[in-house]
Image (tube, rainbow, N blue to C red; front, side, top):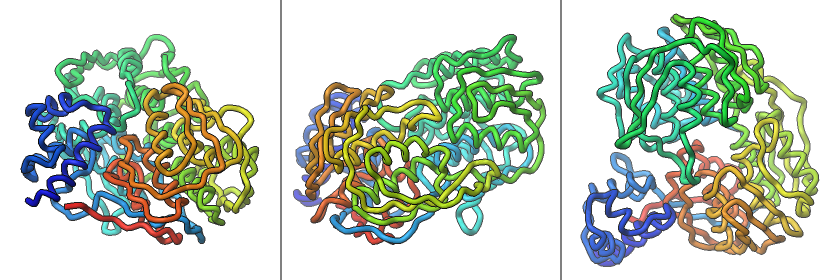
Length: 508
C-alpha cells in the first residue's frame, strides 16, 4: 500500500477516534494492541490489513471500511442550491426496532409493513436471526415477516451486531417471557453521553426480572409475576416505557404504568399489541393500564406510522436551503410544537387536511415549507416529553437558529455530549458558542461556507451537518457517514431527487 494511502487511512482513523472522544491509549486497549501501534497507524507509518480496518471500524462504530459490498462511506456535497418538489416521510426507525423485538411475544407470524431499510433495523434483524428467529424481507424489500422458533438459540446470539445498537435493550422485556436465564451484551449506539440502564432494571424488576451487569453483559434471571402495585417509572424514557409495556403484555393480570412516555414509537407499540389481543387503556397518555394475554399465537399484519424526526429533518432542509418543499405524510400530532416554534420565528408554510396513517390512528398531514426570513426565538429552545418538543428534534434548531437573525439559546438538558457535536457547525461558518455541555448559543444569519467535516458519532448532529452543507456554496465533504445510515433510509439519494448534489465515495 502506498504512503499516501496509508496517510489517508491514518487521517480517517484519527478523525474517527477524536470524534468518539477517545485517546490513542483507549483505542489501543479496545483493539488489543499498543498505543505506539495506534500512533504509527494514525501517522501513516504502518501497513494496515483489511481485517484491522474492519476491527477499528467496529470499535469506533464508524464505516472506515465496508466488507462484502462496495458502498461508499463519505459524501461529497455541492451546496448552495435550492430544493424543489415533494418527498414522502418514511416510517419510524424507533417504532420499527421496538416492533421487531415485540414480535418475539407472538408465537404466530408477524408481518411488519413498509419498514425503512436502515442500519439500526438491520442490526436487530441480525440479532434475531442469530438466535433462531426466521426473518425474511419481501421481494420489494420493505415488508418483513417474523416467525419465532419454539425455542430461541440464545447461545448463538450475534454479540457484534448487538453491541452496535442501543435497541438491543428492547429484548429484555420480551425475553422475560421466553427464558428463565439469559444474557445480552452491553448496548451501543450513538455517542450522546452516559445513558444509564438503571430505569430499565428498576421497571423490569417489578415483573420478576433480576438483572446484573458484569463483564460487558447484562445477566438476567426471570421469574415472571404481575406487579402488586402500579409501576412508577423514574424516567419517562421511550425505551424504558416500551420494555415495561412488553413485560406487561404477557403477564396474567393487570399492570398500571405511571409516568409512561406517550411518544410516537410507544404509541405504535401499543397499537400493535392491541392487534394481538392485549388490552391497553390510556394510549397517548402518561398512565397506561395493561391487561396481559399470557399466550399470544396469531398471525398479525401491522404498519408503523411515519417518523416525525425524519419529517423535521426534511423541514430543516427546506429552511436552510430557502426552498419551497412539500413534506408528505408528516405525523403532524408529533410536530405541532416544533411547527409552532418555527411559526414564532417567522416560518411561512401550508398544511393539508389531516388524514390517518396505516396504523389506523396517527394523524398525518402534508406540510409545504416556503422560503422565509426567520428571526431568533425569544425563549430558549428545549425538549420536553411528548407532547413537548421532541428531544431528537432539538439539534435541528441549531442549524435553523444559525439561519435566523439574532441569537438563539438551545438547552439540551438530556444529553451532555450532543451539544458538543453541534459545534462542528462552526466549520461551515456558523457562530456557535458552547456555554456548557448542555447549552448552545447560536447567532445568525450565517454566511455558510463549504468545508470538510468528520461525521459526528451521533445520528441527529450528523444529519444537521449534512443539511448545513446543502446550504453552503461550494463543495463540502462529510466523512464516515455510517451513523446517518443507522437512522435514515437512502437520505442522500432522496435529497438528490429534490435537486441536491450529493455523491458518495470512498478513499480506498
